[in-house]
Length: 178
Picture 1 (spheres, rainbow, N blue to C red):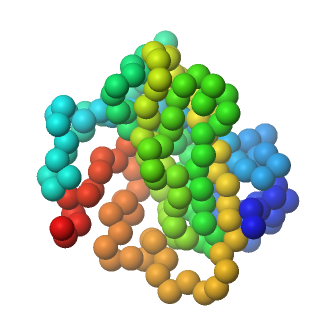
Picture 2: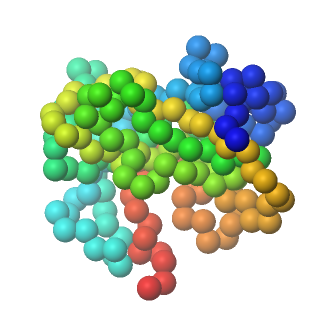
Picture 3: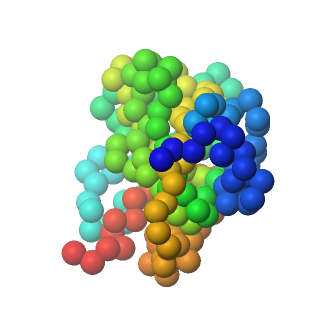
């Protein structure tokens, strides 16, 4: 079951959902709109290695925007910091963003109960497109959890993305054992 606008508001009041900054006009019928933060990043190396810590170069989106190009992977970040303590948050692109040929995540659209951070976006485009800091970029949808939770994400000792950051965070795949 997906939370409605009224249910999202109730959960914000209870403190099980936190969105900072929060703007009531961003609340939709069953989602909350999030915006592109001011930082983007790109990997320094052309060939990425899943067993290595691939370094990124972070840069600020200028006032005049930044042109994204096809065939490149950009890491972005949401302007909003979120906490979700009782529901499963999903981040999906907005239809207006999709209609510009922008994908905001490759595979990481689902958060875990207990996820507390800005969302890193894995951005790719089908043609050149200029993006701007604070433009609407996605929407959070909250799903009800059935059953008790033993292992909240923000309490896991092996969680790789718990450190709060306003910057995009590179892949931490290299921390896995394989």
